[in-house]
Amino acid sequence: GLCNIRVLQRLPRKPVLYSFGSLGDYVFEDSVYDILNGYVEIHTISNEPRPSNTPSYVTYHQITISPNYTLMHFHRDLG
Image (cartoon, rainbow, N blue to C red; front, side, top):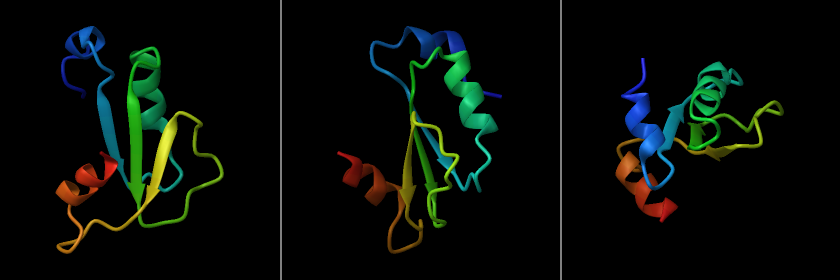
């Protein structure tokens, strides 16, 4: 399940969702987007090329998280 949805819906800024390795299956991302009425920033991270069915509201990142490139690096690079 998700964190407290009611809290996420009341945030002054859009919550950010990081999703890892979707393999072209966006059921989770679609559900979160729908539950939050689009009030969410979604980033999907995978080492595979962007699937053609990636929803327009998903920012897709083709990267590999590793000891040399961690989530901290990724978050820093997002700005």
